[in-house]
Length: 393
Ligand code: SF4
Image (cartoon, rainbow, N blue to C red; front, side):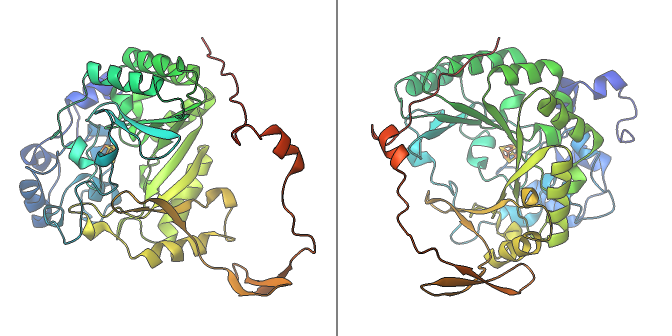
């Protein structure tokens, strides 16, 4: 893996801060390591004022030098198409900016918020749909703004779930991250914390025992990572995920479906199955958002459904993610799946199974589905009482 950086010592290569210091951030640097296509060279020039270029030495080393459709390469090196804004594409495709009561919080859903912890990443993914923030155009998130976010959360008891993202929150120093998680954990109504990160994929050496322990102390905390192709599941990535899981930190994966990068049943099935082998649970397969400069990576909606159909029934249910479309302009997520219903009758429904064979499912005679026990228990505000959280120290 090291031929591109023959002078790096083992200790340097394993040091995530060395990886950050030596990230490739310009066309000139990139050309020293890889032969680029004309399209990539133009892409680097034309996107220079639009989105950052940044590739950790580790992630750069996964690139196939000879193949322009290498999935790692396509996620790391821009092409010209990225500089072309197509009609209908949006700068803020998920409509988040209408829901930012303070700068570091997006509060779009009733019981959960997005906390923007910082604006930089270990690799700037060419498919990033939050690039209005990760381009650095807004400026970073200051300590005061994070304090303002914590105060907002304290004042909003309806929030039970905080997703920390950005930027990549695991680029915060471990002590700073611990401080932030401790502040969140001290807010009694926050039940769960999630961390959205590409660190296990792009900078796995950042995950060490100290970090894993800090994350475990903030339980219930879920790491939501972002592998998009099985080529990214290297021994280092596997070790990072397994270290987290071994320390009691659950890890889930959200992949994005990208045209000609992973848009085949074989690629997605391989990715999902390999995630499970390192105890990372496939969670979402995202349809690409309608974001500026990304039309060349978008797949027709039918492709995702077709891929899902080739997974369901043919492999473990655990390996089948939800196929999600985040609706443009802040409509929220909806999920898609193949339609297995052939006919609905009053007494039965006719399905086709994954092999296309027909089966009848009979309806029961009784249809009262109210739950008498729950009606007593949950009658107050229709909500169960919040469990008391135990903070591990
Ligand atoms: S790591 Fe996430 S936030 Fe950062 S560039 Fe990639 S997709 Fe965007």
